[in-house]
Length: 241
Ligand code: DC
Image: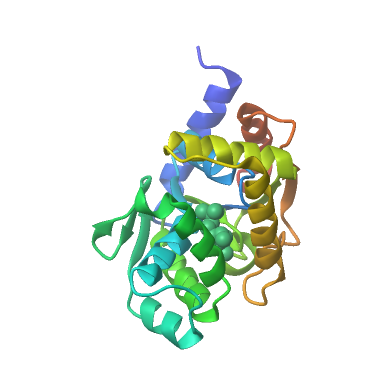
């Protein structure tokens, strides 16, 4: 006997199957660093039987490509040259820079810092959005990032903006670092997150702002199951009514 949630999943995956290849369903999750976007987006994609696109990983891969050549600051001309023709793919939990798998390499503190810098570049953002749109064509995808509901997929069927308070976000990022074998200074992390959020929110191209039609979710006091339950309710109402 299926639970109501099981029935919902079944209906959703059947609809997804029928829609697949005809019209893709795009669900966007934007928000600041450490708000739990990746974990939530990955889990949501799995529940719905959708693909998952980690766009932060794409910016990280570009940052890695840059620091392999030189150290910041980078001129816009340099960044334009780096991303021209560059292939960056985030697929099934793995990230590829051209043909090389860089999944683990892009999680270093140096790449994290550098990704915040290169993400303000107009040519980098233009290329990333181009690659993001290409990669979702004809698919059902949960896309996670900063500008997914505003710039990359303004017509997405369901948009979320996920936030949490500074302390909760730093704690989560510290746990993530720990899982990747990295040490964290919490105070420093809060400061770095703040600086990155400010830069992400204030840049002129693709700033981190909620889309006008996004659902705002503060998950400081929620666990992942509560967040997923809320999202599924909204998705059911917006995509499958
Ligand atoms: O979510 P993250 O920490 O992996 O993101 C890495 C950097 O990329 C971060 O500085 C924000 C930036 N980013 C962005 O500007 N736009 C996106 N769609 C995704 C990430």
